[in-house]
Length: 328
Ligand code: ATP
Image (cartoon, rainbow, N blue to C red):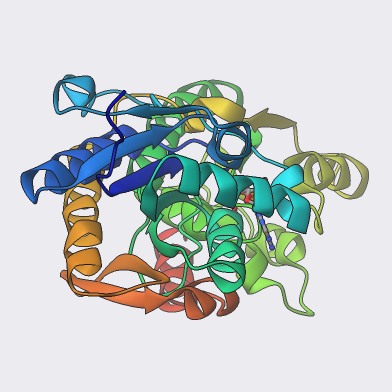
């Protein structure tokens, strides 16, 4: 059998899935092939890298996927990869498959993993920010964030119809982990009355503030978007408090859950993923390593892993004022 001496670029998706990951896989694959590289898809994130679940990708393999949510490469969270032994197995797969550079599409955990691998072995890693949370420093938006935001707004519009019919306070819980981008911006876009977000955690109680502002006379429904937050307890926690402390209000909870992740990516996410995918191959050809490709002020930028992961991405505090002024 003829030995395969080509150098390949490996690509995997890791962590939570996000709409637009497929568009990114397509872009990396096509841009790599356009520039003369071979591409290998690694299935199920780092789990598949350890287990050797690898298949060469052609331009045809990625056709018809730009409009599809989820990820054709599947994704996973891998406990084994967090161990030195797991990463050694992952490196062995890369060597066996002649993969000299790895493109990782995922959130901060996935990029932390890529950084760790690159620190320990001579592997060139490039990251693409793929998470609905938008919590990666150095890029204005992450792949999947815009689609999730639009999905949330669509849901809240529907909840508003029922909330108005019954004079209720609705607490709507949205994803975001410890970042309030989805909550704050969906609150503005859906005309919600308030958002409870981790970044606005102060001594003053956010629920108290909202209730004390009172309901405008003309208002017959109230929607509060709550960022899921393991520390604060989420929408259920606030609904319980209202029931206890303000029994005069009828209160309901809606936890949007996984539907926020799915669906066809927005045009914005498709374009973002396409630009970042092409940017990843350009970065490799440029000799870059261990950087995340981002977009800042509409320009493609390279952000060192250490910075993308470590620094807290700041939420523009003026958004809090915008929501408060407009919800009187
Ligand atoms: P999302 O933001 O959607 O949750 P994520 O990439 O942050 O995505 P994680 O579950 O945090 O998701 O990370 C994905 C995988 O990356 C983990 O299951 C683990 O295998 C690997 N990983 C995370 N952190 C590290 C680390 N510090 N060292 C090595 N590997 C890591």
